[in-house]
Length: 204
View 1 (cartoon, one colour):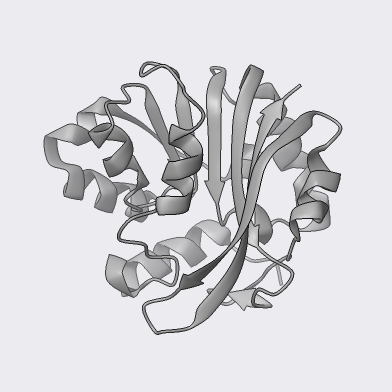
View 2 (cartoon, helix red, strand yellow):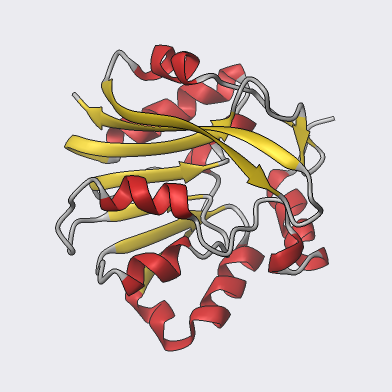
């Protein structure tokens, strides 16, 4: 049976508080470090794929970035983020879309994705990759985080794909050059440890 992903994620956001979801981070430090080290101009366009109601957008605003887009498949997640940000939500562009169906209307200087790509099946990776390429400027940065080869088999009731850093390089090296990478351990609110591969690419 085909999964209704929008319904799946909306139900999840309806049933759990932000501090209860497995991907919760009070401070998304690895993502921030890779973004800040990219030395973008403050008005360069940044998009956070699957940003939901994570705190990355809060820290980007705090660091004076002025051209931020958050995309998520769940309207519930977006509404929660807007409610938390209050008036600051007006300084962010919000897009409700499945990333596989997303047609970028502008070119971004940085594309951030923590924990969306690893939900893509082999067939879905092609759609993701095509949308990624069409949405990036030349020399743009791609900051990507997936479950590593030591990560879990499932997340949020869904199957995932696991990638070593080398496997991510192999997927993207036709159009991207690796700049920096690291393996990290994320501790979920329930105390489980999840192994991640973080990598930053520059578009050729």
